[in-house]
Length: 407
Image 1 (tube, rainbow, N blue to C red):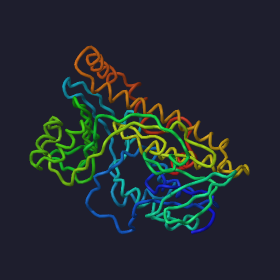
Image 2: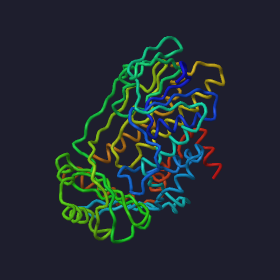
Image 3: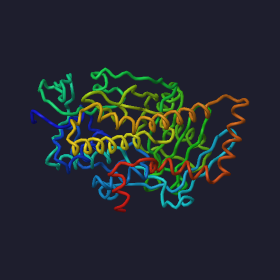
Image 4: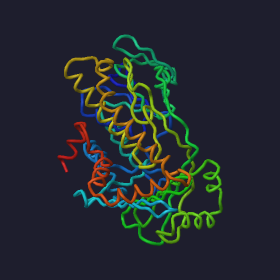
């Protein structure tokens, strides 16, 4: 480990590792730390119960980072359509990528596969030092330098400290950045299942009275499920005998894919909305869940984080070309202006959808159902929603533009 790094990234998950790899062909000296043990062992054949719905923009980023072909060789499941309905009323919206000239709307990819290929790329880079089982203990900003003490008592200095360490970010806490938000009265149950009927490369989402139930298509006629329910209900579902769980799951999903076979363990994760009041301070920047965490309703969380990563890289490299200190708060505020408004817009839109679809029977629910049918009948609105979900809106970071041009 060196005494000085241009950039120290705390958090080796998908977002933090993507930023490190994005800097691998530059002259920047990068330190990437992750508090967990990141094994370089080959990926197992069984499916990870944690998956991400990767947008077209994120795919272009992965192409520029040089990991897309590896992911395809392992396991990538494109989806071309999305079908959403409300269980009690039957009101539905159908999205089809062909309607906007796209072969796919997105890709379902296992989280550990994305992280594996990113970390393998980082390990092979000459300008990135990666250490797992290690994190930050304290930091102090002095002019254009940030002095760090790590959990093994080693001390280093960097030009910019990047917090990519999740919604309980130690970097955010040490930087004195406050958060706002709230915990939902829901947890998400995730698992991998097999279905009797083919999923037709379609992402399915059913809105139940207590929260959405999503079936995300995987290879071999498998699906990843995300079942949002009240905390006690999610825990009860996780503890049911397999045959009873399978029957309740198929029934909740209106038997759209026939009978269901549980093919993995079940995991339960509490849900919340949280955002940092500031994304940057002198010498510090936050990306991904350290800056914002949202309801998984539309699967946009990791895509927002990857856009943060690519955007911050653009800002840093442009500042370096101009001879500016990369930890300058004046420089970093460009990143904050670029990403914060977009992230907040998506966050509150997802929160509004969540609240709208868990409304008790009454006038608002009737209006909601009528609105669903209206949106489904107006193609320009559906086109706008699909283009927004692709991530190809507004000012795009260089590596996403380059990935698109290279296709």
